[in-house]
Image (cartoon, rainbow, N blue to C red):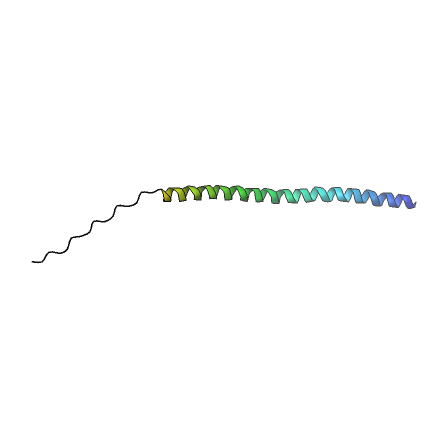
Length: 74
């Protein structure tokens, strides 16, 4: 009689740990996918910003404005 109770306790512990492991995996998988999406988005933004910086640095300098001559006296 006592060994049956101990057996059911062990069966409950084994089943409970399996169910807990599966639930933990399912919850964590969603969080990991969200983090991976954030990393991908950050990389895309980083590349776009690098291209923009490169484009701005390699622009030709604007021509200087022509200076007006001194006003002539009459």
